[in-house]
Length: 133
Length: 169
Picture 1 (tube, rainbow over the protein chains, first blue to last red):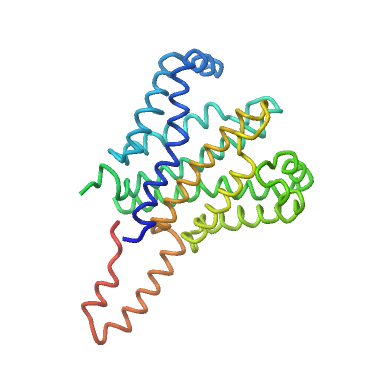
Picture 2 (picture 1 turned 120 degrees about the vertical axis):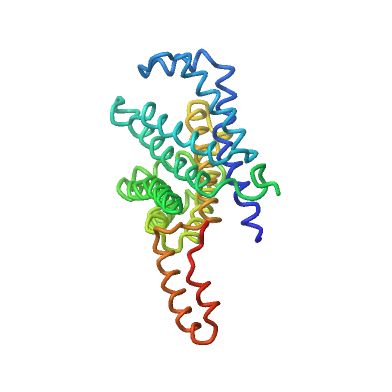
């Protein structure tokens, strides 16, 4: 197995988790800010949504990082990112000065979902708990 | 199941291209604005990007649109993904190095930096695993295998039969 086939998936997982894990941990500290942000988009039960977000961003991302049930973890993260894109980066419904930034964020979220779906399709790769033998 | 996996890889490639191709197009459309944007933001290598802003914008357009299209149709996918990784890494370090930026840009640029990191991760996975079945790469591979198997079948029919089997990944 060549070097990129061996280390590539692990590095890819690390880079993807580098987005979610620090963000999730920061949300634990700023729980009220997160609740406020979620409520400002008109969602019901913002505390539950915030707790769920933290759960996904920390626990599921960790599972993806070590490659434990990576396919399922990647699928959950993909759905989460897609929902976040549609709900929070709805560039078609924000005031004019935010449109550019939210549009970039929306499409970047889509690209990240694409990458996550690759993990969901092909698994965690070598160097993971799923494939440790 | 294999069909479903192949469909999901096609969807992934479409989602990635949905980010890169419009980004490349937009860079070309608002040329003067983008040049001003880069010149206001370049932090790690200011000399390089400020002396050749037009070349840089052109390189951005070619990379993002060209390699985005390659990902979309699945032609030379691994190579396109690898070159796109190099491009996004360079772009990330040059323009989204949030640790060198003033206060008001810090939050947004941090988000952009880490999102680009995740995109690089996804592209790395495409480089490792290839395009999947619904791509031009796979089509060309099948044609080549059929031709090789036809030539081989006269002398070594068993090897020819193995060559024609689909890679069940």
